[in-house]
Length: 107
Image (cartoon, rainbow, N blue to C red; front, side, top):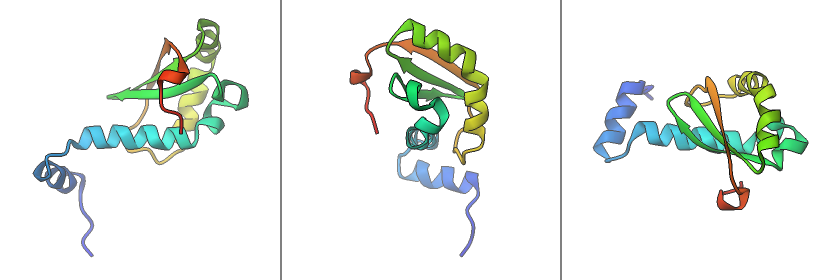
C-alpha cells in the first residue's frame, strides 16, 4: 500500500470539502482530552479544559483566575508533556481564559 504524503492528504480532504487544518485541530484537542489528567495533574485536571487550538496556541478554559495563575507557572512543563504525544498539530503556547467548565465538552 502506498503511503500518502501530507500534500496528498490535503488534496483528498479538499476533494471531500473538508479542511485539513480543522480536522488536525479537532484531533489534537481529542488526544489532549484523553491525556489531560497526565498533562494537568489530578487537581488541575478537574478545574480546566483544553477547548480550542489556533496555529500553535492552545486555549485552556479555567474555572477561576487563581487557577489560571497556577497554570501560568506550569505552562512550559505542560507544553513539554504535550510534545511527548503524537499530536497532529504542535503546541508552542498556551492561552488561558476564565469561564464555566460546564459550558465545554468533557471527554
